[in-house]
Length: 260
Ligand code: MG
Ligand code: MG
Image (cartoon, rainbow, N blue to C red; front, side):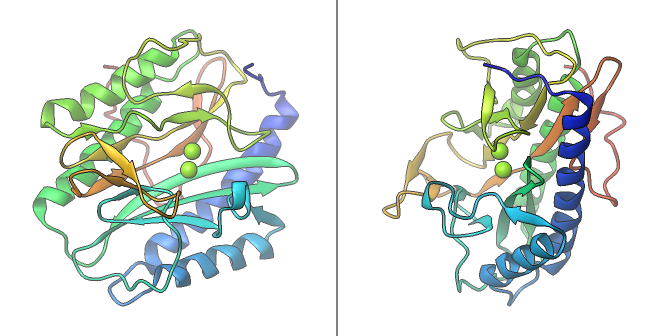
């Protein structure tokens, strides 16, 4: 069941998302060679707690961190740890906040120091796919329009698009209907309506699309161990526009985002 949010619920979700945007902005700047992923997690907990929120991932089905931190071939759901980030790594930071009962969800993938040009392009194109997905997420269109837009942005480059995990409704819970895949499948294809709040989150691999689960039962990695990128925003569909609720202060709207 897709829950359409009222204006007051959207206002609450907006506050949760705005806190998350400032947390993500801070974390992005903390990433550098020599930092452990646990330091990022600690800073996120501190900022969220200081601002009246709760890390939504912490304890979710037993997850041990405020962040999912996924390095290099890790796609999603990695644990914060004492792993030291090294020059040339990429780190995906995924965070969710519950604030006053309203949920937000956002992810970025950041290069540590200097990354190869191949990896740099993967990050740029996955980020572009997120914004092309957002551009397609307007009232009256359908979930498949988002999926198609994401897929067509990255597929021509020969990347692997992760299929078993996808975007989702969010706002009153961390994960709600509908599912928002990064490819056009045969699943439900609901129409986008004003009041829908969704997280759009392309996950794209430098190599093949196959992924597997590590023995910790959480961390998803690429089967061929190629590097993976992940970007996510929470957006609200409004009558005349779509608002990117987790947009960071320094982040421009992709004006050239194409309606593919
Ligand atoms: Mg997320
Ligand atoms: Mg999500």
